[in-house]
Image (cartoon, rainbow, N blue to C red; front, side, top):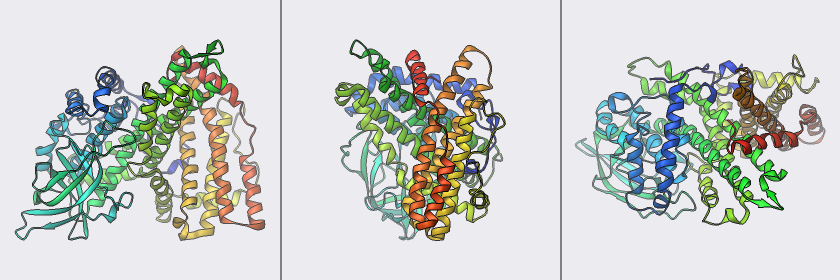
Length: 603
C-alpha cells in the first residue's frame, strides 16, 4: 500500500551533489496525502493524551508502564505500519511510518523504545524472515504482545560491528545452534521477548538469529544507569550455551552483515524523523517560555538575542524536516517499483534502500545535531529554570545527546557519507569524478557564483549560494583526492570535513527546493505566509551553509597543500565564497516573529 499523494523521482543516491532538481521532483511535507495528515494528527493526539500523562511513570521505570504504552500504541496500529497486511500489519509506505516516528517523539524514552521495536527490532524479520518466521512472530510484534530488540553491539565492537565475539555452532544433528557471548547497550533488553542477535558461526560466518527470551541460556543483565532516555530499558544480553532452533537462523548463514547494515540505514532515517519531532517540541517549549518570562518590563521574546535563538532553531528544523521527507519520498518511490511477490524481494529492498545510504547518514548526523543545538538553546533561553529537573528542558537536553551515538556514531556516519560517495564514484555508479574534474578545470575562471536568469527573483541569492557550496565541496574533494589518492580514506579529519560540506549542500538544496515549491503553491493567505517564512528560513540556512562550507574547505586545503600551491587554492576559495551577505538580523527577526505569533514552528 502507498499513501503518497505526489511522488517524486527516485533520483540516484548522492546525485544532489552534482545535479540540480526542480521543486516538482522532490517530496516535501506539503505533499502529504490526506491519509498521511490523518496519521500524523492521530499520532500527535496519542502523544498528548497518552504519552504526556505517562512521562513520570516511564521515567521512573514503573513496572509495566512502557509495555502498557507500547500496547496502547499497538491498538492504534502504530506498531504495524511496516508489517505486511498478511501478518497482521498495515503495510503503509515509509512516509507514513516516518510520520508516526516524528509525531510520537514527545518523550525520548518512549521514542527510543518505540523506534527500537518497530525499526531495528521488527524490520529484520519483515525483510529477511521466512514465511514461517513471519507468521510466528510478526502478529505478536504488531500489537506489542511481544516486544522486539536488536542485539548487535558488544563491549569491544560498538562501531566495529564486524568484529563481534559472540559465537554460534551448529549441533551435530543439525537441529539447533548454540550461541555464546554478551551483547551490550541493548535497547528494550529488559522488556523484550524477541531478540535479533548477531553472531559468527564457527567464528567466521557473520549471521543473524531470532532468539526468544524464554530460550534456555538467555539472561538479561542489570539496567544501565544512563545520562538520558532514563525511562527506556538498556541492559546487557548474555547468551550462555543458548540453544536456538536451526529454523531461527534469519536470512542466510554468513550474510548477516547485509541485514545489519541495511536495517541501520532505515534506523537512521527513522531516527532523523524522530529528531525532527523532538526538535519541534523543544522549539515550542522555547517559544512558550520566552513569551511568558518577563525581564526589564517585557517578555524576553521581544529581545533580539532570544529571537536569534528561536529563528536559528526554526531554520535548522526546517532544513532537517525538508531533507528527511525528501529522502523518505525517494525511498518510497524506489520501493513502490518492486515486483509483486518477487522471490528476491529482500535483496531488492536492500538494493533500493542502500541506494540512499549517504542521505540516511546525512539525516542521522544533521537531524541529531540540530536537536542537540535546539535543546541547548532551550536551556539557554530558560536560564536557571532550564537547568533544574522541575522543567522539561533539563530532560530534553540530557535525552538529546544519545542521538549522536546510536544508529552508528556521528563520526562513523560522517565517514560513511564521504566513503560511500567515493566508492560509488570509483565504481562508475555516480558521475562524481567527471564533476570534480570539470570544477577543477573551471575554478580559475570567474565569476565565483553561477549567474541566474533574474538576479532580483525570489530566492536568487540563495540559489547562487547553493551553486557556490556545490562548487566548493567538489573543489575541496578534488584537491584532497589529488593529494591523498586511495589513502584519503585514512584521513578521517578530511573525510569528516567533506561529509559536513556535502551535508550542507543537501540541507540547503532541500530547503531551497521546498521554499520554491511553496512559493509556487498558490495565493491563499496561509500559503503566502508559509512561503514567506520558508524563504526567510532558507536565507538563514544559506548564510550559515556558505560560512560552514568555507571554513571546512580551508582546513582541507591546508591539510592537502602548502606554499604557493596552497596560496593559489585559497585565492580560488576566496572567490568561490565571495558574496554580499543577506541581512541575517532582519531575516532572524522575521522568522522569530512568525514563530512567536503562532507559538510553534511556523510550518
